[in-house]
Length: 190
Image 1 (cartoon, one colour):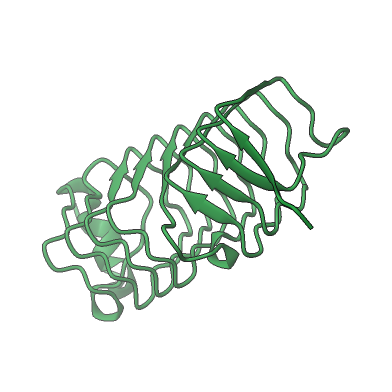
Image 2 (cartoon, helix red, strand yellow):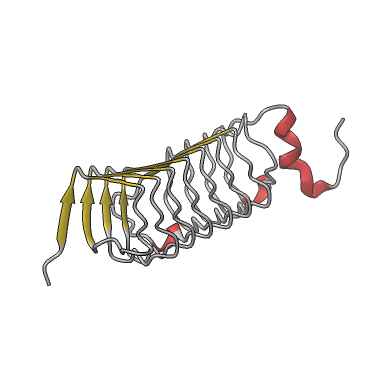
């Protein structure tokens, strides 16, 4: 079966829940205010695409290729990025809601998360070396055996990171955020 190849196309205000996206490869495409919620995007390939103001809640990503993808103002609740293909995986998030998503064992070196809600997100065994968390809410996010070396958490909040069970060498934290590193000790910081 021949795969569809779509290049440099803009999809604006398209409801893909009514007319599903054609399975194939999408390169340099832009998705603006589209509804892709609950779609099965398994086996799709997206390269250098941008999603802006889109709803991708509960999208299935089994063996999906996400290569240099930018998400801006998107709702991405409950996504399993850990099911995506590893090859050239690269994503960037700006003002998104990623609550309840998973990046389990995902390589995310130098990934940027800006003004993003990451509540209850699973970063277990992920590689977040040199990643930036700029003004992000990390309430209930799981960091266990995670590589956080050189990661920047200075403007983020509500995180709980245990230094003993994560690699945090040269990671950056604000003075106010130090409590997120000491929470398990049940001490009072004033």
